[in-house]
Image (cartoon, rainbow, N blue to C red; front, side, top):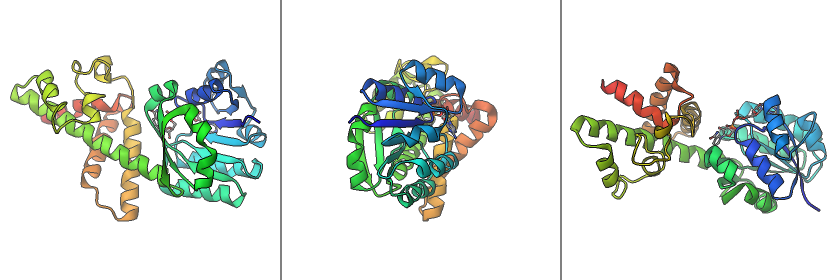
Length: 295
Ligand code: NAD
């Protein structure tokens, strides 16, 4: 029998992810608080429910894609009490490790299987079905999720026990925030030294400075035509979301006792950028902030 999937949180990421599940042949019932998100999902073949609970009560798999930990805890609190025993619960939101573990505990208390499965790849990857999933949870739960995660992504990594997916996501995005700041600083220094953007790109992209922030999301227009810098820094991946992930990394660092001085510095840079009203720009626009510091 085909799994019936209940999908809650049909926003920028969840909407296209649910659409890919429909495309793969799953029966998907969805819910979102926003009328616009519900309408867009319905246009892609998602059957709408009157509430998240109504969708979950008849599903064998429940997927959530929500803004933050408090939303996940609140939604999982009610969904785990209506889901049938044996249901697989998958949260794909990016949230703090503690909330992820609490969500797993809610599921375990009702004899449900559960996974934290945050994603990398942005709205483009969500639409194309090419997301990377970083998954935490038991091997048994992971074993049940293969077909579902494969319908939405192309790389699926079982990172370990409950919470390990969120831990991987936070570590990865701390690298990303730091590396974007580093690449931006290098371009600002090059400008001061009279070195062209293209020359720095041609050297660094084939040298030891090579990284994703340079070769996929180059923060200056020109060298990488598809990067948001060529499109007035429209996201892409918004600076406010980068700040959210960097803050999660710093909460996790202080809770675990890890020292992450560059992570702390990147968080401060993105906080200042967000405070000056630029949170909705792509995170590569941090180069503007670094130029302003220089000026
Ligand atoms: P979004 O704001 O577009 O979507 C979130 C949706 O959740 C909204 O439509 C909102 O109405 C809905 N929602 C909130 N509370 C709800 C509730 N109680 N019941 C039902 N629906 C509810 O956000 P997004 O960009 O889709 O991001 C979702 C998650 O994915 C976040 O945790 C984000 O950090 C993560 N993420 C985003 C990206 C990205 O590029 N946008 C990339 C990777 C991960």
